[in-house]
Structures are given as structure tokens and as C-alpha cells.
Image 1 (cartoon, helix red, strand yellow):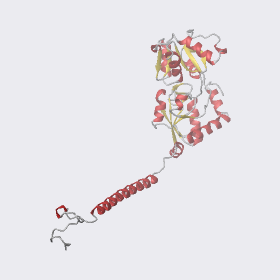
Image 2 (image 1 turned 180 degrees about the vertical axis):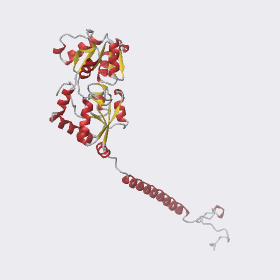
Image 3 (image 1 turned 30 degrees about the vertical axis):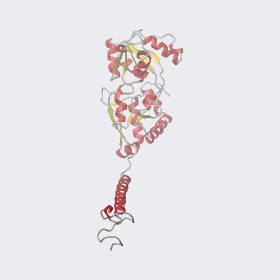
Image 4 (image 1 turned 120 degrees about the horizontal axis):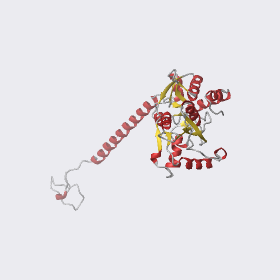
Length: 320
């Protein structure tokens, strides 16, 4: 019912002094509050759903079986997959009579596997792809007279060195193309400088991926004293030696023990011994600390027992 002074049906919801014409459409009390409540309930539902999904995901993650370490997997499977480059006598090569892998590295790894209680599954490949194959997860370890260097430590972890290894220049028998007078008494720095002078005008062969290739790249090619065409890079060391015998290159830069091995079977001889930094270790996938520690433990045992020295003597390699 309208108040005094208002005709029936024309009352206003506004205060005094406002005309009836200003009356808006009838409003619904609490409509804004209900919309706000609906929005809050919707947001709550969304947040709750997200939390439930997250909790479910975490529970599934917790149920996933943790990946075993390389050492645990090797022991469980009963085998260790080892990469090598069987062209590097006396470290690793194929016995021509039996067709089996043999050499210092091969026998050492077989002995290590025996101590682990597992078998070795050998994978022979070009030296320069060994580390990338390890990184791809296709190998458990590498043994290939691979010198431990800072660059390689970025790609893999290594055991302690298992043998002392020097380097050499190999030439055709009777050749005097590489000669450094007084090399035996020179310091490492003096010998390196003299070696640059001795090699810069020659055609040099190296195995791809080795420290010998790296040394030539840094000290000869990179220094601008030798043209790139004078450095021949080979997938396998025996290919370099074949070219040396054929007269296509003047010398080969490689490990001393390997040079001496080729000197026994080919018309070549060692012209010079060089001592680059570093010695070989066994490479494993980066982060596999347990495997490295176990291998180091076995290597130390074999060294203490005299096995490594005896094996080195068998292959005419320098001792400790």
C-alpha cells in the first residue's frame, strides 16, 4: 500500500523528493551476492580438482620403481657391455689364429669382470665413436687405451689409470725424416716444441679421436704451422700404418706400446718416444659413481697382487 500523496500503483522505491517516473525495474535482493557465491564455489571446485590431480600424479610417481644403478644392473644381468676398438695391438686386437679379441686391455677387462662375477659382452667399433656410444646408453664401459683428459671427463667418468702409457712417432724402417737430437734429456715443454719443428713439414697420420689427433690439431694445425691437408685422420690405427708402409704419409703418431707392436709385424720402426700428459683409464657413464668405485677397487687389488705388472710384461708394455 502506498504512502500518503501517492496514487496506487505509482509508488517509488526511492526516498522522498524523487518522482515516480524514476522508479527502476524491480530489483532482486541478494542477486549479486548469489553470483559471488557461485563464482567462489566454482573456483573452489577447480582448485580442489587440481589438487586431486596433483596428489594422484605424485602417488603414481611414488609407485614407480627407481632406476637401478649401472653396477646393480650389471650384477643383476650377469654381464657388462664393454666398447673397444680392436685395432690397437698390443692393447686390443683380434687374434688372427682364433678370431677372438685379445690384448692387454682385453685380458684386464676379462679379469675385472671375473672379479665382478659377470661376463663381458664386447662391442668393437671405431675409436672416435666410443664415447658418444657410451653417452647414448649402448655401453656400460669403455676400455681402449683411452687417456683420461679434461675434454673426455666432460663426456664420461673414468677410473684411476691402470697402466703408464707413453707415445711415439712411427716411421718406415730406415727413415730419418723424424729426428730430434738430445730428445732424451729434454723437458716435456722442450720436447713438445722440438716435435712441432720436426713434424710441421711432414705428412702425419693419426687415429681419429685420440690425444695424438688433438695434439696435432692444437700444436700444428691450430698454430698455423702445418696445412690441414698434411694431417691424415684414420678410423683405425692399422689403416694409418698401411699408408705409412705404402709411402702415402711420412709418419704415424700413436701410443708407444702400439708402435712397438706394429714394428714387429710391419716394415716400420719407432723413431722417437714422446710423453704426453695422462694415462689410460676405463670410461663409464657420467654419474655412475658406484661402478667407478668398484672398478677402482678391483684395479687396486689386481695391481697389489702383481697381475697388472705381469700382464704388462706379457705384452712388452712398461710397468708401473
